[in-house]
Amino acid sequence: MSVSLTPGSLARLLGQWNLGAAPAYRELADVVRLLILDGRVALDVALPSERSLAATLGISRTTVTAAYSLLRDQGFLSSGQGSRGRTCIPHRGPRGTATDGRSELSGAPGLAVPDGLLDLAYASLPASGEVVHRAFAAALTELPALLPGFGYDALGVGPLREAIAARYTAAGVPTTAGQILVTSGAQHALNIVLRTLAGRSGTKVLVEHPSYPNALDAIRAAGCRPVPVAMPPAHHGGRAGWDIDALETALRQQRPAMAYVVPDFHNPTGRLMPDSQRRQLVRAASASGTVLVVDETMRELNLDGAPSTPLAAFGPAVVSIGSLSKSHWAGLRTGWIRAGESLIQRFAAARTTMDLGGPVVEQLAAAHLVNDLREPLPERLASLRTSRDTLLGLIAENLPTWQAERPGGGLSVWCRLPSPLSTALTVIAPDFGIRLAAGPRFGVGGAFEHYLRVPFTLAPKQLGTAVLALRSAQDRLEASPQLRRDLTSPPAVAIA
Image (tube, rainbow, N blue to C red; front, side, top):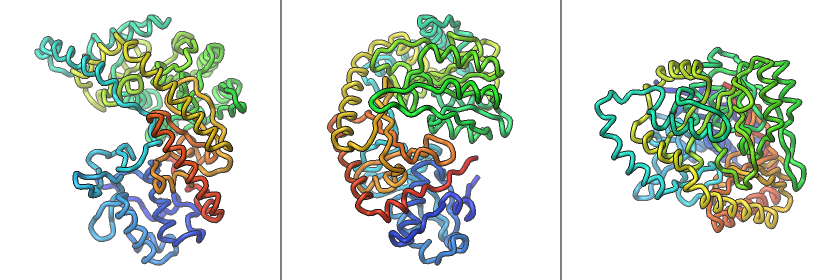
């Protein structure tokens, strides 16, 4: 079914966009482009007609026509009948011509990087190639034994569930295969959990603030209301943890149906929750009747080797979500849910309304990868440590007014900016050859204009180029106070 954005909805998202620092059509196009890149305007959505948007904004139709034309030239708006183009992400075709890329990118804004841009918006790694290839070769030899079956399995194939259960047991959380549900990635797992535990409109879901943007999007899309609890700022040159007192207070007073937390190398800050705080959090959630949903997708990316215990070890009312996307490759699309057996059966029932099971060959390959999880990790972690330290050094040298929090693991550095420049930097970043995700993507209600997440997933040489580009973009904003004022007035964030 075709989806259209009304003029009023787009006007609310635009906020105060036209303050006269540049031609009005350019300012309008810049902010719409940011909304698309940030995911606040979805892909394949028809923008309002030129006439209706001009009337709503109180500007000339010529201005809207010119803005839409610029967005088409940049590849963010497809050609359509009349003026009703549809939002898209630029993608380079075989001859270097821009195409809308909708078939590849529907529902996942910005995943394809336009030619010539270094991507600092997404924190992900290429495949651990030889290891993944070898796992698929082994899986193909095992496939004939499963071919007589139907191939549908909402819980997942036995070898993979047993391998995941063994990993939890070895980590101090006794687990059986009956406590595992295999999913098509961690995001799929979260959607299953939300549908099962928080399916009613307006259900409260506690979240850390900041938090993982795709999780926030899933919570809103489920009709739930995020209840943000702020994480304390990092001490200059040091690390901070969680405000456990604030979490306990929110659980006691708000009594949310579930809480989504990332205790293992938190995205975006990279922090690791101490075991003492894990124990307190589980106790507080149990007292309030809240189900703790724990995102463990970064757990294996422990760069400093700090010890920690899986949160599920501290209480039974914990649902754990994991994935191979960060440790091995996002293209595997393999994740899982660990919970009590009765809850797993409820998740499986909810899952069948979304799909009937995952691809079998991928699951057989994933079983080999989980069983041999340590094989690719030492080399991968050593490379990430080098990239992290390189990035921190580059920021200290070239962006001395930035405060970068040193992460203990994960894939990115959370930086506090000297002024609320995050959205402005994101808008102009493509002009300097980089792509960013604005700080407000990690929060609720437009927060975190003072922050930017910078992944260290690029090679050290590319990181050097990217940091110099960030410095140039910041210099441009500092040299143009009016431009900075205009672009740092963030668009209002739509809460579904």
